[in-house]
Image 1 (cartoon, rainbow, N blue to C red):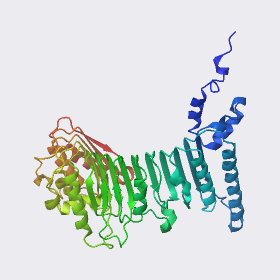
Image 2 (cartoon, rainbow, N blue to C red):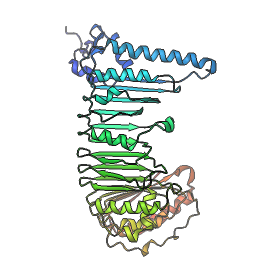
Image 3 (cartoon, one colour):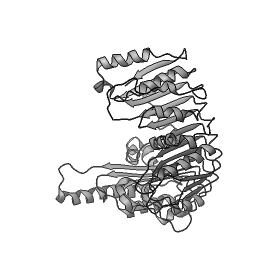
Image 4 (tube, rainbow, N blue to C red):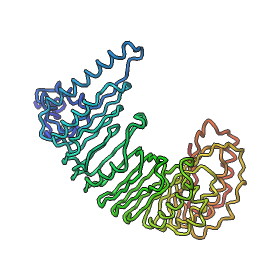
Length: 461
């Protein structure tokens, strides 16, 4: 009688390449533990092309100052011995993915020399994807500069300071993050970014977070398709140093931080643009005018963009200067996301430059906590002949204390002739909303006239 299939070792019968693929999703401690499965698995882990060293360690709750040094030495020895022994026993040909992710409550647990030695091992074995995440500041070893096998590089807490231009001819994706915990000693300068772009002719995705200064920063690349720059910091000495972008094949652009001047010379392929800008009005004079000029150039250049996201600062500047900067329409924009911190009446003027808008998302936060007043703003005085004609979906997230939202909703329902779905979310709905107030809100929404017969209003918490 044939043995039941449940007793067969189907996992060991899989092709080696498939087993390696399965193991690539596991941390190395779990991969090494597979030696207990069967004889075939004793040395199988030594040939895996993906090495994922992820360690999370917390100090003992009752560990005092006297025990801290002992604990640190013990944990450092444990992680060093495991990683070093695993690398010594590894028999693979090349490394497809190499990841070091050390999360610990003690910044001195993993030394800079440890990270340097492990990174150099990956470089010697022609690593294609390298990711380093550390809570302690370390410097990227110079061997990384000449690693021509790299296709993807992600550095969090690892400072880049190369002398000259790196040789990353195959690099497709690059991520550089500076954690706030590392303080101001960690620097990513504009000049360093320019050198990186010069040495990465095939780079398609570039993300940098917490750049100390964008002075002399010029993003020029014919291969770049996605650019994300977060938490850009502008120093007081950066006056007259705009961020320059020239990427003819760029499709996605996301900029966040303390920045007010951008110059775009060629972004003809751009589809999605996001500006999450905040301003330090004490560092520079006329920041509103500078940002206004930048947004004016944005609207005149981004005629082909389909998705746009704007911060509250951008909305305020545009509304305040709408006679100057809202003359040019953006006919290609179908998706618009706004972060709003003031009355909804200001949004009406802004919607006028998006005549073919189909999806509108608004995140509104106003903590003035004024008493409800449904008739505070007369939205019906606005004309809507040139917009809202294509609008189909609206989602609004708002805190419960601002009731100017209802006049805006009434305006949308009256003029959006193709509206299909309007979703209204209130923050802290359950804890803040009294039953009588909920009844009044529902009654108000039901009484609003609708120009679209298929429009549905949905309340969510």
